[in-house]
Image (cartoon, rainbow, N blue to C red; front, side, top):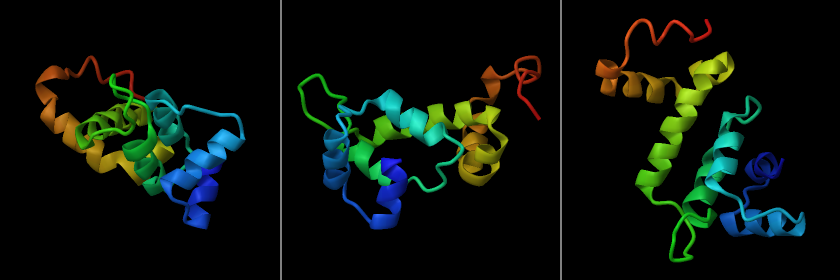
Length: 118
């Protein structure tokens, strides 16, 4: 809900963090970000991305924020999980999924793709 509101209100990552803290939520983790992006009701993800890159606790040294590579890996995970959600596959993550399939096509067999819902 906070991310949906953030999109409409043009909030910064700091404002979003403040809202989470006021609700007694946090720290927001990588897993939380994945779950938000997989949610079929989240269509715009720029604020989620900005928040993750700046505020998500990821580093052993206590610093916050994801690197671009860490976020790319997160997007790949989300794209794979969205294969089960038809409305997310075609609208949001189809280019990423196609890129992943091309990159990893040697690892896929027709047998492993038969469980993907149509």
